[in-house]
Image 1 (cartoon, one colour):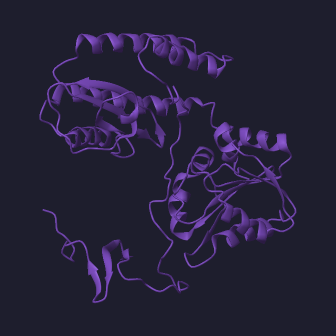
Image 2: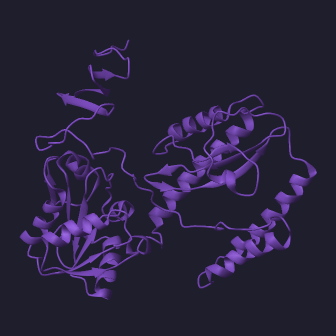
Image 3: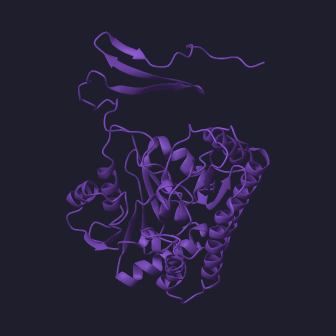
Length: 372
């Protein structure tokens, strides 16, 4: 059993298993996978980590994902399957061959990987397993952060800070909101974020409806309020900040409202101590805002947990795919991503299914491009 298996995260996980009498824990929640193993992947096809109360954990995933898993994770026991095989059968087989066919098997029924279909598929293949519901464990285990997690969140927050300063220094009336997002995306990538995905950047109005708006094609004009919520991720850990930008400067009324909101939030933050009830923390801002008449109602939360954000939902749709066992018929007007690779070279096309045959929707020349 490798020494690195004895990680603080694994110790915490096994404590939760002992508390409910689980011999084995099935993990299919993207964030918990990363937190525990150092590797996560989308739900294009089912994948899971199995953690026994004693002994070495193992991973079950697509053969295509084995190499990155080996590189990123301390897990050394990796069970793989090809794309034309049944993932749930592979998981079940791995449990049976390791002698856990009669185990008390813990599973998080709140995990977005544990669909009704997945539970049915696994239960049907593991008839002698005793299922133990551990709903919410994927989030509860990760709630208290380790020092290394705090540091990653700090790094992400610093990236957001730099982007806000860049907005202040560079953005002017006449910019498209899309251009602001592009500015931030570039900063994210240059400064070490996982991707250029920025978070909501929109012209704002109203109390809360703009928070999840996604309009990027508007142009900033005098008096507009630019709402910026930046959500950079560093090694999947996301920090988030919101600030308003007013084109031409805030009015006196806007300044007064902002002062009240920030004061209430300062009070709220100051009160966030171990043992304090979350509802009491919430009330400081919620009740304060309503009492001050700043809003007519307050329907949204005043805060939520941060940490790991995995690659979900799936970025690849395998509801219809091409394998030796794929017997479905193509339908007119379906569109597929078709790809092939060998010897370090890969080519792909976006293909539209028409009565005349497949039509490439992209126009990129089919060749190896050269760089000077």
